[in-house]
Structure formats: structure tokens, C-alpha cells
Image (cartoon, rainbow, N blue to C red; front, side, top):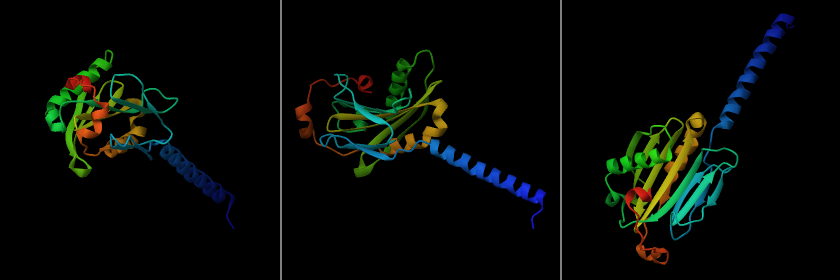
Amino acid sequence: GIKGGDLARRTFVGLLLAGGMSAAHAQEAQKLVADKLYTGPTAYGFSFRYPKAWKPNKKKGNAHMYDLEVKPEKEAGAMLTVTIDQVKVSSIKEFGAIDDIAKKVVDKHQKLTKGDTVTLVKSEETEGKSGMKYYEVTTRSEKLERVVKMTATAEQLFVLTATTPLARLDEYAGGMSTAVKSFNVKPNYIENFQQYGTNQAPAALDAL
């Protein structure tokens, strides 16, 4: 038989293991997962993945041709946004060199950030499906990290922005990375957009 001391030790070890496993599972459960696909209107031809518990909301107003916000109901700070604007270019390279665009993104985020200094973490050019080129720019302030992924086609500029509070970066980084990587825009033709035309092509900084 098992002596009392051995039984106590085994029970203690068992509890430790059980506690460790449940803690690991609890920690895993907190990790953000982008597990639902959002598909934009057919005319725009974009899609991306987002956390299914978050709520998409198409914003009204004239700030952009299309303005979508996806965020958790109860937590401030974290969000995904997609904006579409009319521009006079049909590729992201026509819009500007990535270094120039990265500086403009930093300037834009600096204006949105009161007091904190915004720094450029990285900028890179990527290629998606159908050979579409994208610019990806990551900035960071004292409280927020923003990852901007953009492309252009048919005189439309598509911009996805993933905003994460630095305090939640460990939990949210994986899900936000999935959302950014999954952002896909189909090559399009200007004829599809004529009904939306406004004859107002914003300057590069305004369009971001």
C-alpha cells in the first residue's frame, strides 16, 4: 500500500500539475484569435479576419468613401478599422515610396496621440494574392501600437489599421497579426467605382 506521506506528496504533485495545466489553459484562452472572416461589398472586393466576439460597425459620415470599425464591446483602445478613399493612382507604388508613406503615417499617428512621442517600428512592402502589392507600417507610442496595411487599385486606397494597447500586446499580438496578414484586396477596375465617384481625391496624408 501507499504510506500516508507518499499519498500526500502524490496528491500535492497532482494538484500542482492540475493547477499548472488549468493556468496554462486559462492563459491560452486569453490570447486573441482572429477567427471570423469579414467580406466587404462586392464592388470593393476586400476581406480580412477578425475576432468573432468583436462587433463590426460601418461608420456614417463623409470622412471616407467607406469607413468600417471592428472592436470589442466593452474594452477601449483595441480596434481594427478599414477605410477606402478615392485617389488618383491605381497601385500603392504610384501612391508613393514606402519610406515617404511611413513618415506620413508617423505624422498622422502623432497628431492622433496627445503628448506621447510616436516612433516608427518598421515598414515593409509585401505581396498578397493576385500579385497585389501592400505597404505595412508599424508605429508605437507610449500606450498604443498601430499596424497599418494599405494598397491601391482602381483609383481607390484601401487602409486597414490594427490598434493595440501596449498593455494587452502579449495577448493580442497573434490575433492582430492574423488580421493584418489576412487583409486582402482584389485587383479592380475603375468602372466598378464610377457610381461612387466624388471627384475629390484627397492628399496622401488625408487619405491615411
